[in-house]
Amino acid sequence: MKTAKFGGSSLANSTQLKKVAEIIKADETRRFIVVSAPGKRFATDKKVTDLLVEFYQKRLKNEATDQLIVDIFKRYEEIGKDFQVEENILDQIYQSLNHLKELAVENNPHFLDEILSNGENNNAKLVAGVLQTEGVNARYIDPQELGIIVTDEPLNARILMSSYKIISRWRNANEVLVIPGFFGYTEKGDICTFSRGGSDITGAIVASAMNVDLYENFTDVNGIFAAHPGYIHHPEPIREITYREMRELSYGGFSVFHDEALMPSYRAKIPVVIKNTNNPDHPGTLITNERENKEQPVVGIASDGGFSMIYLNKYLMNREVGFTLKVLEIFKEFNLNYEHMPSGIDDISIILRANQLNPQLEEDLLRKIAYVIDPDELQIIHNLSMVMIVGEGMKQRVGSMAESTAALARKKINIEMISQGASEVSITFGVHQDREQDAIRTLYYTFFE
Ligand code: ASP
Image (cartoon, rainbow, N blue to C red; front, side, top):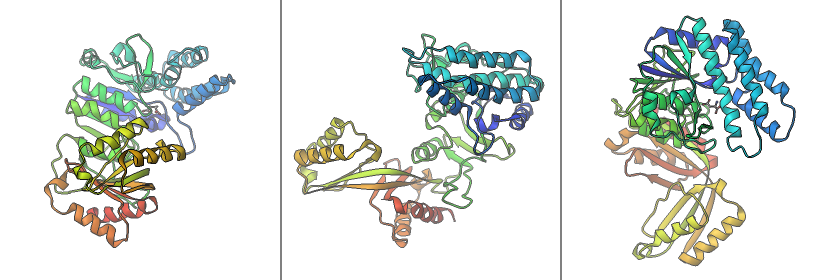
């Protein structure tokens, strides 16, 4: 059995929906279908979820929303009419959109959750209707009825462990279940959404609860590439990647797949495949627990900007018990999260996201470190990018670090920081943001061509 999740671009118009219906009809084991809200039909178009955000903002400012509701409704209506879905489906969608106008703005912690979830919810009803006209025995199911019960954290819900068992009761349903992604219900019965892009999370939860053999995540690309196509012309596609590698790449800036979404399928050891609705015969990218081919040391190169680094040096630091603890306590006091902390005998660098800082905070922080630690040298360096090479194959192979640093040196790219975890799944290089692109290209051509 399979769970198939379709992203917004796969459901944006009738042409796309026709492809989705063909994909579902082509394989009877696709039993659980999770859908996003309709996405963009063309580059300058708006996603329905973004229109719903606009609706929310207008409601807050008490501005007229009638036209917006009409515009959103048209998105469903066009598709519904093309497929001649049952009339009452479009009526239900229209009513549920109008119901949004009646929601209380004040003292309503789930106000935005309810508005946002409307996109997925209506789309699941529409998709179920479309599949029926295509001869599929499909049925819309509300996440509450299915059993997606979540924590009460508006816009950032997490699944409750007890949900899995409840959801699994639907494993042998006779119909193909069409499930709206992106939200669940709290134990009290309020709608609560996952973070943005969270339909991937629903897909993984359903896949895991139903214990399917494969979770197919359909998008509009042939899977994941080894580097960002904006930086590398025609980067190599990744055929197979492990969960750990994927997690590192998502952290490092790859945004194909919601990173929280990997958790449920990872735990349940369910392979995930990222496939293209517009090219369903392409094998896509398979994410598994174990990768068969580990000959290739590096599977992908990611990068992310907007980092700062605090560097401190103190002679004989290694002899001082609790030195790092003292530094980190200061970070805690300033409520700062750090991302990496490579250290030498007498020095430590602490890398953090620069958006947590402001000039005043920075001054106070440095003053406090100077006072408590009394370092010989203390510096803050801004505008850093982290470039990360990822691959479980590096562990079994000598020289990945040497090859990388040699290549960067040849291009005269100064490395401000190097960090490698004990797991050896990735190596991170901190470089000045002006050299980020050069660094990616250099590392890509070192490992891929
Ligand atoms: N529609 C939601 C969003 O745009 C969730 C999703 O598509 O996964 O964030």
